[in-house]
Amino acid sequence: MITQLQLRRDRLTESRLVEMAEPELQAGQALLAIDRFALTSNNVSYALSGESIGYWGYFPAEAPWGLTPVWGFADVVASRHPDLPAGERVYGFFPTASHVVLQPDQVGPRGFIDAAPHRAGLPAFYNAYQRTTGEPAAMQALEAERCLLLPLLGTGYLLYDYLVDGGFFGAEQILVGSASSKTAIGLLNMLARHPAPRPRIVGLTSPRNVDFVTGLGVCDSVVTYGEIESLDGAVPTAFIDMAGDGAVIEAIHRTFLGQLKLSCAVGATHWDQPRGRTRVEGAPSHEFIFIPAHIAKRDGDLGAGVIQRRTQTETLRMVEELKGQIALREVRGPAAVQAALAELIAGRTPADVGLIATMR
Image 1: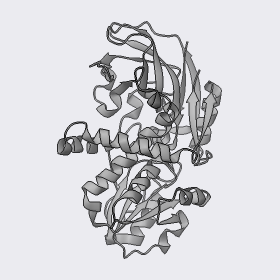
Image 2 (image 1 turned 90 degrees about the vertical axis):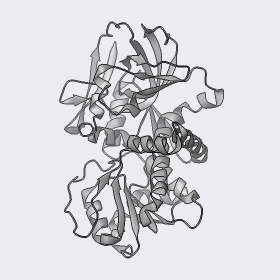
Image 3 (image 1 turned 180 degrees about the horizontal axis):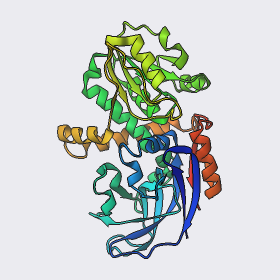
Image 4 (image 1 turned 135 degrees about the horizontal axis):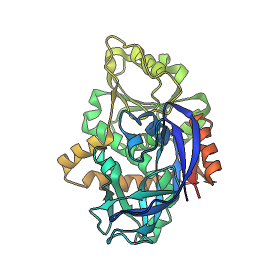
């Protein structure tokens, strides 16, 4: 039996648990039992971008319901693919479910892609899976951290690379929204390590997360959303937005106007706040950064795979540094996972807690 946790696409506060029989595998397919995955604000961003970027399309469900993608580990429990036997352990992009059927292609010693027809037109970055059975013991011991931190810290590193590649866009100050989010932590960590002279680093967060962000030691200053207008609008600034809160974006644009050298969105942690905003004359447009497109650019600049190797090196370093600062909490069983996701969507999960979930 397969159990799925489905969200209502147009009302994220509604969810349902659905049970269905395991399908009969077709030639070339494999059935994977999803063992563990992380639940973070990043998953809320996937849900909010489900239509615009296509995240609902990776694991189709009957509308108006959808399966939120998550990063985690799964075991091949049945296979009709000659090069991917049962017993293999796999890391990658999965649904909030107990099982998933994939159609492996380009299977090699390190991994494969899912070539299911419904994924053909979607961003290919998320179709890649890693085979982990033969990995070193040190890597296997980091499974929880890989679920929780590696995709998000990795995105943070790639945002840093985007800024460096653009010469910080002429900014003397980097303002990072939703600074307690794990993607923001990755970006802030890299900015803090950038050789001098570097831009000033400002973390933007809610009052309840000020102590957590300050304790990370990666910001020159930490500012709450209510203090935006106290910032010096004459300083050339780049704004990296993880929150997606229209009122916050508008306040920043009004404060900096033409001195805002870059304004870009990466995620949407404040899903319940108005998305729209009034266009501020004299300020730049607020653009979305699609990380897979930046990876493709850097593959062209540096050679295939170079940026991914740099990303992995830095994210593993950051994982070690963050040990003890983020407490891992296990969530077991469909009902418990459903409740934990509801708490996350409601914004009640503390910033210093990382959720590792299993539907089984």
